[in-house]
Length: 131
Image (cartoon, rainbow, N blue to C red; front, side):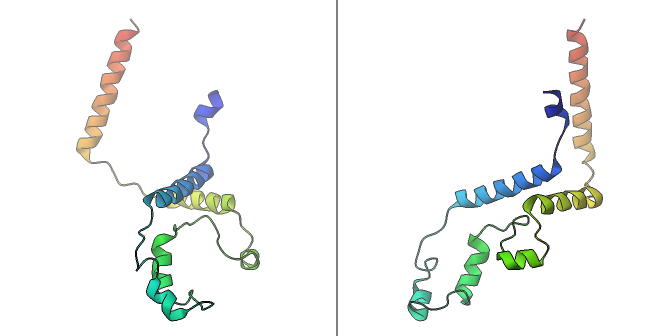
């Protein structure tokens, strides 16, 4: 139990964040109307036609499909050509890059003071209750 509270996997955190992002996108739902159903595109391309090269398909693919960084959606042969990295490998690399390069914005001085005051008040309360 002690280890559970003091160890942390940045790799798993990034994987979990990616999954949450995908779930949020699904929960947003999709608009269903003539435009999103591509009724006119279907009529013009016809049965058996190529919809993938249509502007409509490209436009909606970028807004309707979740945009992920850690999941590789390439076909297997292309994935293998690029090194066969799994999601955990990419998440680990991303975590390392974030830890090396992230520059946090300093807290607003008023927010920082409020946090210090809250901690001081909690410390005083704990000290008072232990007597």
